[in-house]
Every structure is written in structure tokens, then in C-alpha cells.
Image 1 (cartoon, rainbow, N blue to C red):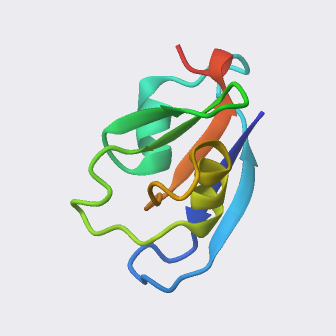
Image 2 (cartoon, rainbow, N blue to C red):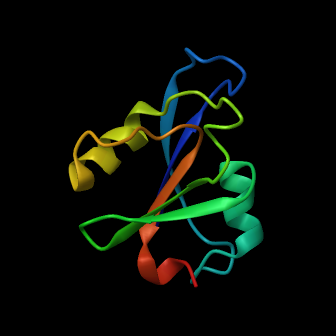
Image 3 (cartoon, rainbow, N blue to C red):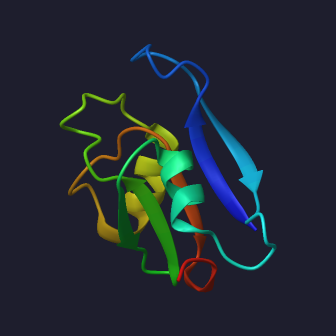
Length: 98
């Protein structure tokens, strides 16, 4: 089971970010197409210190996607205040992504 941190209104930089539980369609692991659908484009994988991974839009900052505070908190728990996460983000077990 994975957690999707997504925006209710992606066109609004001040939109509220929601947390949603999601599962792979096959019940085992996410396909590339599923991951791209969740983040809205090419994916980038970030390995978190607790063994989970975070999947984000590789071009999120270039596209001007809004700051995702919920995902940024997850990132900063692993790496400190080095960066911020923008756009939708999926956090899951590393075994759920091939």
C-alpha cells in the first residue's frame, strides 16, 4: 500500500494537498504508466532513509508545479532542509516499484 500526496487543484499554487492511500492495479507493483499517471509526467525516484521510495515528476520544478508540503516533510525527514518537493508525490515500499 502506498501514499499519494496530491493536489485537489493542480492549477492553483495555494491549493490544499491531500493524502490518499493507493495500491498497484495488479496488487503487487506499480507499472511505469501508473507512476507517470500519479505524478503527471516523467518520473524521478528518491530513496528515503527508511527504505521507502518517493516518486515525483522529474520536471516538476521546470514546469512550475506547486510546492507539496506533505511530500516535502517526508523528504526532509530523510535529508533535512536541502530541497522541496513540488507536484504530486507517491511514497511506497521499494518492492512496489521495479
